[in-house]
Image (tube, rainbow, N blue to C red; front, top):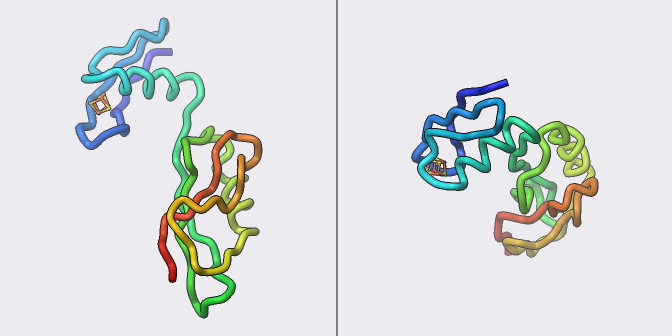
Length: 114
Ligand code: SF4
């Protein structure tokens, strides 16, 4: 099944076309071709969310996946993130959940809290 889509890998937003044989046109770089192939065969996304900071009042720390995860696991991973809380100080890159649900992606802190 061929498909037209917009590349979201960078702000340029190339219009891509991918055919049944996974040939990609319209991409300005190889990352767009890989994105189109992944979208057709195994779509992936980055997740951003927040976790509670236990030792600070009304404080949340932002987190994200370290790499893209399969789109079908987004809600299960968000449930795992909901279970977690951290203590300040937090540092960008701190691992909150290692290899979340066996995806190969860690959940990492994206906010410095003193
Ligand atoms: S194909 Fe390359 S240049 Fe075009 S939007 Fe995707 S990443 Fe950016």
